[in-house]
Length: 510
Image (tube, rainbow, N blue to C red; front, top):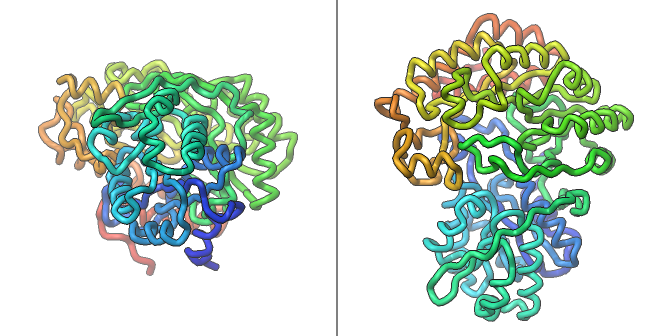
């Protein structure tokens, strides 16, 4: 039975005082906008914005009333969000946005300022961290910007706001106090200033749990190849990534992990409160620390929760022994970022260290499947230095590797990454647009020197998906792997998504 949207909105304001001190918002985007296609349909894939959920939990832990509204999952319009603000009258607004959703954040903030010019609007999230000056120099609808880890910075901003009796003008005029808050961008006399980078939180166990009670968790259904059981919860238990891939804004960041004990306790609590049957871990490289993973798996085995889970891993961080242990602990699916079998191309994006060589990549897939764990293999098209022939070699390699699922994304140099800066400096090729709403990894925003035009890349994208997924042997394997009615639903949903994604005519049930 579907839960009314208003009931889910009300949930976002539960356990609060009458007026929220801050309403945290994830701006609305559609599935079509996220994949750059109008034919994908409603195949799922919405993810809870874990970053602002942690901030919500942290602020609430320190005594502030917090509201939460995920415009994406709730499929609410900007006008509807403004109506919620009118009804709830929060004292301030916090908006979190990825790069491709940034312009939706701008539209939302402009509408809020139009109706409530004195309401404090703070921007955070991935784009704010990657390009902190861009929003503040170009859009006056944002009063402040939080970059980096947002928990402590957000708390200090609210503490200062409270000191100024929740008067935004008074707060923004207190430049001396704003300057003392690390991780902040503000304006003064028409100029934009950035304070010192905030030190990362070293002990993640000290953080309160994310405010899961405020989210519409029924709406977060993954894509068909990314889950086995519902209800499912998403988690991030490790911050940072030890690898230095130039296309990633998390490259080379300080790695810290919640303790295995803390993680299993949180999973146990979610199982008790929400009946969770599966966990999807979204950490960049969950397997990076072998000792941590061994302890986590053993604790999951001992807890006997009956919960399955999936994660992301790098090829050089696994072996048969750890994979067998992960399977026993409930792991059923691992996402590996292989990118390309061409070592020269991998070196161009500094991704060779995590993958070693093509033979090793194939071996890792065999080890993983032998352990009884499915493999999602990620490859990149239009890597710097790539040509159409090299892309075809990659497609052939993906079929030879034969993972359970393959993802072929288009290289997207996000602002704030080394790759973006290299291309802006004239290396590798050229950007085709700087409209950040196109930066979702399914559009050609970067044309490498080895390609004539964008159409070449789009044709190769279709070739990759078609030649991998429409192989008779692949289809037969999937048919024989069906074990439940839920599997049938997932595979059918996945087939519809594939045909819609590639803008072919969708199959019809006979």
